Length: 315
View 1 (cartoon, rainbow, N blue to C red):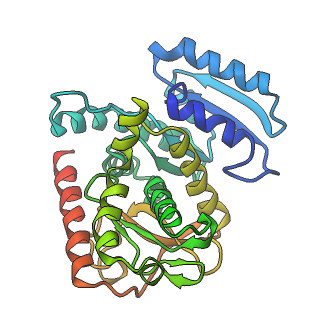
View 2: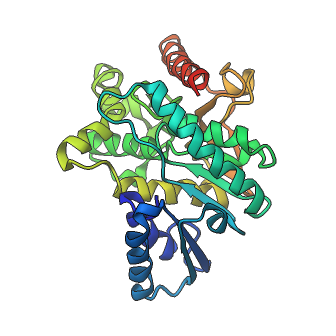
């Protein structure tokens, strides 16, 4: 997907240091499908023309093995989209084939310890497919992007309260990157105050807020006639940067990761690729422990888990 919308928005951000830092040189591998090869070459030309000081090399290719050779971080933007009239099962079947091939290439050619983030929808299940078909890659090194949903939740709280988004923290996205996701503000803060206290409107937080975050992608498509690209690319950088460099003290983020099951995973079935609140340190993520889960939250968390179980069975 390097020549696509998200890839085009992501590449310059990575080259400017938004993903790994302003002092980290990079070699950028760009992969797309053969029909997009000419466009891919154009993207590579523009990156060369931009003369980014951090960019030490470009590999632009339609060969998945070449693209995966020696990589430390893999951002999987491409997938088979669901078209009009397509059944979910059909989409799953197409993506199993795509991600099976990419999993094999990563397992064979990527550096040991390669970190993977899957962006293409259905992101959770695509990541699970990749993880299952690349058993040599540690399961904790395969994730999916729910940071976009997390950032959308931060933005909505910021708009509602008038506080800068930098003052909002510790919202949670539970579950699937879909309309069943559960955006949770019960443990979040804005300017040091609990979000529920700052907003003072539980009906909004339990209703309109949740629906807005869940359906934000569809709203952007309706407005732009194109899917989210700028925000998705920015969120990918946030996801990887926090994973590699660590989350700020007292702050967590949301990541789609393989559930370890049991109490440590808030009762979510082992093996599901599920979005949890996590902290990151030393290149590793950890699920935030001990959060109180009320009955309403439990029901919403279980509902999105049920959808993921259904997707897993289809895949």
